[in-house]
Image 1 (spheres, rainbow, N blue to C red):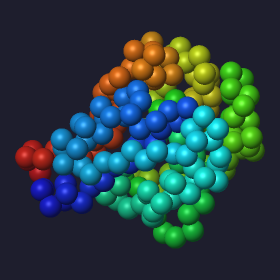
Image 2: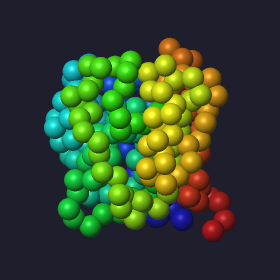
Image 3: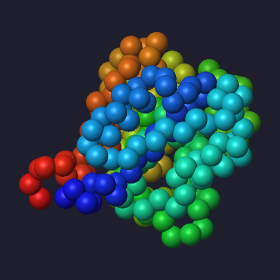
Length: 197
């Protein structure tokens, strides 16, 4: 089990206006590292003025061609950027787990400044053929991403959304500095170090 664990890796992608040090990202990275999973949180460029091409390049440089030892967790605009990158891959790829927190693919009434980044609707067909486990997590009181838009994303991906009550947009200012549901989603298909099997 140990040799398999050392090959596992996770990447956490933040969202609009955030950095790798914000919210629950560091907490999740620490938990995954404690499990022996190599974990990185890249800084996506100019998070307050995001450019989809530059974000896509950084995601590509960090993630490369994912394989069955790879888990990706993304938050908010990072979800869209990650999905867009995965959709662009021409080489054969396969992802162990994709966890999308407060994700969306539609324009947001509360953040019209992101309309250009969001652009036209993203084609999500066939993505699930490349992903062993896909989890979408939302709150029931998100002021920035309407829960219905995260539900729509989940529907497009063919999974139900998991709901964390009262978590807002999963920001530190919403009181979210740890996110056990994301940890559980990222690790539920894995065998913990030292466990039987």
